[in-house]
Image 1 (tube, rainbow, N blue to C red):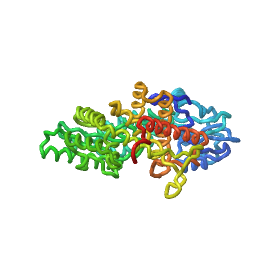
Image 2: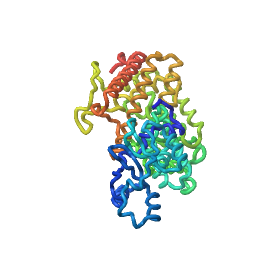
Image 3: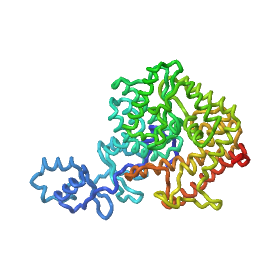
Amino acid sequence: MPNISLNEENFYFLPVASVCQSPAITCSPELGLVEMARLMTNGNISGIVVVDHDMPVGIVTLRDLRNLIADSVNKIDTLTVREVMKTSLITIHTSDYLFKAIFLMAKHNIHRLVVVDEFDRLSGMITDTDLLRIQASSPLYLVQEIESAATIEQLRLINNKMTGMMQFAVKTNADAQSLIQLIAHFNDALTQRLIFILDSRHNVRLPLGAAFLAMGSEGREEQTLRTDQDNAIVFPDSFSHEQRGEALHFGEQIVSALESVGVPLCPGKMMANNPDWCHSLSEWKQLTERWIAMPGSNETVLFGVFQDLRVLHGEESLEEELRTHICECARRNSIFFPNMARNIARFKPPISIFGRLLVEKKGDQRGKLDLKKGGLFALTKGISLIALESDILGGTTWSKLERLQHLHLISDQDIETIRDAFSFLIKMRLEKQLIALSSGKEPDNFVDPLVLTEGERIQLRSALRGVDTLLNALNSHYQIDMIAR
């Protein structure tokens, strides 16, 4: 399939093989009609393909049986499938696109097509119900559902369809950036609708002048699946004690609502329901200045989450004011950048100098490697740090790389290597999480190299070397080796 970017029209260019029911329930042309009807009942199907020597030769549908009962009810127990089946089959190949399936069904006024492989052997069946099902998993359909949801419970049910939507999107062969942007768009729409429902149905709202912030991966619009909440509230210094209480109450309600629809709580409690993450503008400025001036291990973690802030709801001007303050503070504290770089450099990619993938030696994740700890963390934080030095805050890692490329702070070749590494690792993380969810397992950041194809292992090694490229750039730029331990 061609490598096409993700949009609603891509539905029509999915291959039939990705949608058809396989293997199809079949029967022999010599089977009695009563036995055939039992097969259809047991399989809960409305049409059965007749096969002779592995080749489809006919089809019988519920409509055929209905007409037969109306015309020849007394003969049913003596008839065979061969005598009633339709032999003028309308078939479609597994490699054909869905738009052809839609066209054939409309042209012949039928509800199902027999799917065959390149040798015209039966591969499966596709029905109009299958087409509706896959369309219902499309991004546009789900966003429309979100925008019309009236209750938190409805949003929870819609959020549960997220996995199906992403499986649909992955099948379009979309690039990593398009997939991640799709998740960000979905999550933003979900949160915005929750805020509307809290206001209209529960009389809970953020006081005018305050802002609800997304942080971390959500702030960068780079979430994959089941990412923890990272959010905060900022409000004007002029807020009264009562208004502060209303802001914190909103934080408690939105965090609880997000959890109820399936967005996990942050284990570190970096959320708007925590008074430590609900402050006035001046209080946030004081906190960030302290984190930057004294970048210890705890401060670097807190700053690393907060620096990717963006306003999801409320007063948007507060976002720019906080970002400007962060840039000014960072410029005034020269030791901040090398100390942050040294902390990032501790997260070495799990690959030896000879290209051997290094996996966990013990514990529940034995034999696996951590895509986040071993790659994505260093890439996102390292690029954010270099970008911050140039007063670049906000946006995705991809957008920061693009802006850094224009500034020539990193060579074009290294930029491409780092971009490819980030895109591969975040897409692999997403795909492995989808596989885990479809298998009834909890998604995580780990991957077992032994279950990867040889091509995937080669790409993974290349991506991890790309992480090394970034760490070397950090070391060269900030002279990390010269910092006193």
